[in-house]
Image (tube, rainbow, N blue to C red; front, side):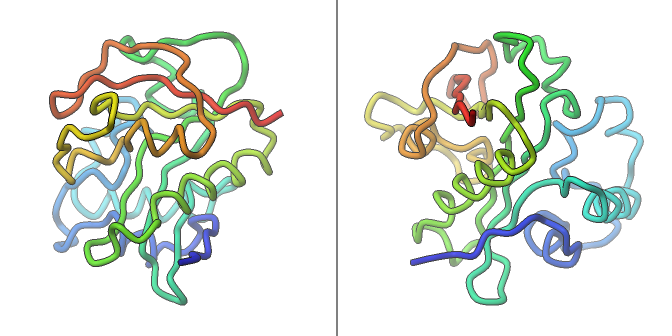
Length: 193
Protein backbone atom coordinates (compact mmCIF):
# COMPACT_ATOMS: atom_id res chain seq x y z
CA UNK A 1 0.00 0.00 0.00
CA UNK A 2 1.25 3.48 -0.80
CA UNK A 3 0.91 6.46 1.49
CA UNK A 4 1.35 10.13 0.65
CA UNK A 5 3.90 11.67 3.04
CA UNK A 6 3.92 15.47 3.35
CA UNK A 7 5.39 18.11 5.66
CA UNK A 8 3.32 18.47 8.84
CA UNK A 9 1.88 21.88 8.00
CA UNK A 10 -1.80 21.23 8.77
CA UNK A 11 -2.27 21.58 12.51
CA UNK A 12 -5.62 19.76 12.60
CA UNK A 13 -3.97 16.71 11.02
CA UNK A 14 -1.06 16.87 13.46
CA UNK A 15 -3.55 17.10 16.34
CA UNK A 16 -5.29 13.97 15.02
CA UNK A 17 -2.02 12.05 15.37
CA UNK A 18 -0.38 13.43 18.52
CA UNK A 19 -2.93 15.62 20.29
CA UNK A 20 -4.95 14.69 23.37
CA UNK A 21 -8.58 13.65 23.42
CA UNK A 22 -9.21 16.45 25.91
CA UNK A 23 -7.93 19.89 24.90
CA UNK A 24 -6.95 20.63 28.52
CA UNK A 25 -4.74 17.54 28.89
CA UNK A 26 -0.98 18.06 29.16
CA UNK A 27 0.18 15.18 26.94
CA UNK A 28 3.48 15.06 25.09
CA UNK A 29 2.43 16.57 21.73
CA UNK A 30 5.90 15.34 20.70
CA UNK A 31 7.45 18.27 22.55
CA UNK A 32 9.45 16.40 25.20
CA UNK A 33 12.46 15.98 22.90
CA UNK A 34 11.96 19.21 20.99
CA UNK A 35 12.25 21.66 23.89
CA UNK A 36 14.51 22.14 26.87
CA UNK A 37 12.96 20.26 29.84
CA UNK A 38 12.21 23.44 31.81
CA UNK A 39 10.30 25.03 28.91
CA UNK A 40 8.53 21.77 28.06
CA UNK A 41 7.27 21.37 31.64
CA UNK A 42 5.98 24.95 31.78
CA UNK A 43 3.67 24.46 28.81
CA UNK A 44 0.35 23.16 30.15
CA UNK A 45 -2.91 22.05 28.53
CA UNK A 46 -3.95 24.21 25.56
CA UNK A 47 -0.58 26.03 25.56
CA UNK A 48 1.00 22.83 24.26
CA UNK A 49 -1.33 22.65 21.28
CA UNK A 50 -0.83 26.36 20.58
CA UNK A 51 2.93 25.82 20.54
CA UNK A 52 2.58 22.95 18.06
CA UNK A 53 0.26 25.08 15.90
CA UNK A 54 3.05 27.66 15.67
CA UNK A 55 5.52 24.92 14.71
CA UNK A 56 3.19 23.84 11.89
CA UNK A 57 3.30 27.39 10.48
CA UNK A 58 7.11 27.56 10.71
CA UNK A 59 9.68 26.55 8.13
CA UNK A 60 10.65 23.81 8.35
CA UNK A 61 7.51 22.07 9.56
CA UNK A 62 7.94 20.01 12.76
CA UNK A 63 7.92 16.70 10.90
CA UNK A 64 5.98 14.75 8.32
CA UNK A 65 2.54 13.16 8.12
CA UNK A 66 1.51 10.05 6.20
CA UNK A 67 -1.91 10.10 4.55
CA UNK A 68 -4.13 7.29 3.35
CA UNK A 69 -6.15 9.26 0.84
CA UNK A 70 -7.18 12.36 2.78
CA UNK A 71 -6.92 10.71 6.19
CA UNK A 72 -3.80 11.39 8.32
CA UNK A 73 -2.55 8.01 9.56
CA UNK A 74 1.05 8.56 10.68
CA UNK A 75 3.43 11.12 12.19
CA UNK A 76 7.22 11.42 12.29
CA UNK A 77 9.10 14.13 14.19
CA UNK A 78 12.18 15.26 12.29
CA UNK A 79 14.26 18.40 12.79
CA UNK A 80 17.83 19.63 13.00
CA UNK A 81 19.39 18.00 16.06
CA UNK A 82 20.59 21.44 17.18
CA UNK A 83 16.91 22.43 17.56
CA UNK A 84 16.07 19.50 19.84
CA UNK A 85 16.83 18.27 23.34
CA UNK A 86 19.18 15.74 21.69
CA UNK A 87 21.62 18.63 21.20
CA UNK A 88 22.11 18.59 24.98
CA UNK A 89 21.64 14.87 25.59
CA UNK A 90 23.94 13.04 27.97
CA UNK A 91 22.62 9.63 26.88
CA UNK A 92 22.72 9.98 23.07
CA UNK A 93 26.29 10.63 21.90
CA UNK A 94 27.43 13.28 19.44
CA UNK A 95 29.62 11.60 16.84
CA UNK A 96 30.96 14.62 14.97
CA UNK A 97 30.31 18.28 14.23
CA UNK A 98 28.09 17.73 11.19
CA UNK A 99 24.76 19.60 11.33
CA UNK A 100 22.81 16.34 11.54
CA UNK A 101 19.04 16.07 11.71
CA UNK A 102 17.18 13.83 14.15
CA UNK A 103 14.20 11.53 13.59
CA UNK A 104 12.95 10.62 17.05
CA UNK A 105 9.24 9.88 17.06
CA UNK A 106 7.01 7.69 14.91
CA UNK A 107 3.29 7.36 15.53
CA UNK A 108 0.78 5.30 13.57
CA UNK A 109 -2.92 5.53 14.34
CA UNK A 110 -4.63 2.42 15.67
CA UNK A 111 -6.35 0.57 12.85
CA UNK A 112 -3.56 1.47 10.42
CA UNK A 113 -0.68 -0.43 12.00
CA UNK A 114 0.98 -3.32 10.19
CA UNK A 115 0.30 -1.79 6.76
CA UNK A 116 3.67 -0.14 6.07
CA UNK A 117 2.93 3.32 7.46
CA UNK A 118 6.14 3.33 9.53
CA UNK A 119 8.23 2.54 6.45
CA UNK A 120 6.52 5.34 4.53
CA UNK A 121 7.14 7.76 7.42
CA UNK A 122 10.84 6.93 7.61
CA UNK A 123 11.21 7.35 3.83
CA UNK A 124 9.26 10.60 3.96
CA UNK A 125 11.40 11.92 6.82
CA UNK A 126 14.54 11.08 4.84
CA UNK A 127 13.23 12.99 1.81
CA UNK A 128 12.14 15.92 4.02
CA UNK A 129 15.56 16.24 5.68
CA UNK A 130 17.46 15.76 2.40
CA UNK A 131 15.39 18.46 0.66
CA UNK A 132 16.31 20.87 3.44
CA UNK A 133 20.02 20.21 3.11
CA UNK A 134 20.64 17.82 6.00
CA UNK A 135 23.95 16.00 5.43
CA UNK A 136 23.05 13.14 7.79
CA UNK A 137 19.84 11.91 9.42
CA UNK A 138 20.07 10.22 12.81
CA UNK A 139 17.52 8.07 14.63
CA UNK A 140 17.63 6.58 18.13
CA UNK A 141 15.48 3.44 17.89
CA UNK A 142 14.99 0.58 20.30
CA UNK A 143 17.19 -2.46 19.77
CA UNK A 144 14.72 -5.24 20.56
CA UNK A 145 16.98 -8.17 19.77
CA UNK A 146 18.98 -9.59 16.89
CA UNK A 147 15.85 -10.86 15.21
CA UNK A 148 13.73 -7.88 16.34
CA UNK A 149 11.46 -10.31 18.12
CA UNK A 150 11.49 -9.00 21.70
CA UNK A 151 8.07 -7.49 22.36
CA UNK A 152 7.86 -3.71 22.61
CA UNK A 153 4.81 -2.03 24.13
CA UNK A 154 3.14 0.00 21.36
CA UNK A 155 3.01 3.16 23.50
CA UNK A 156 6.78 3.02 23.98
CA UNK A 157 7.62 2.14 20.39
CA UNK A 158 7.56 5.81 19.38
CA UNK A 159 11.36 5.78 19.01
CA UNK A 160 11.04 3.14 16.30
CA UNK A 161 12.71 -0.24 16.00
CA UNK A 162 16.25 -0.81 14.81
CA UNK A 163 15.24 -3.27 12.09
CA UNK A 164 12.87 -0.73 10.48
CA UNK A 165 15.69 1.78 10.19
CA UNK A 166 18.06 -0.88 8.84
CA UNK A 167 15.50 -1.68 6.12
CA UNK A 168 15.51 2.02 5.21
CA UNK A 169 19.29 2.03 4.78
CA UNK A 170 20.31 3.46 8.15
CA UNK A 171 23.44 1.94 9.67
CA UNK A 172 24.38 1.37 13.27
CA UNK A 173 26.69 4.20 14.38
CA UNK A 174 26.97 3.89 18.17
CA UNK A 175 25.55 2.54 21.37
CA UNK A 176 23.78 4.95 23.70
CA UNK A 177 23.16 4.86 27.42
CA UNK A 178 19.46 5.50 26.81
CA UNK A 179 17.00 2.73 27.67
CA UNK A 180 13.30 2.87 26.80
CA UNK A 181 10.73 0.30 27.92
CA UNK A 182 13.55 -2.01 29.00
CA UNK A 183 15.26 -1.95 25.59
CA UNK A 184 18.55 -0.22 24.81
CA UNK A 185 18.48 2.49 22.18
CA UNK A 186 21.11 2.67 19.47
CA UNK A 187 22.22 5.56 17.31
CA UNK A 188 21.52 4.88 13.63
CA UNK A 189 22.62 7.13 10.78
CA UNK A 190 21.87 7.64 7.12
CA UNK A 191 24.25 9.73 5.02
CA UNK A 192 22.18 12.05 2.79
CA UNK A 193 25.06 13.59 0.81
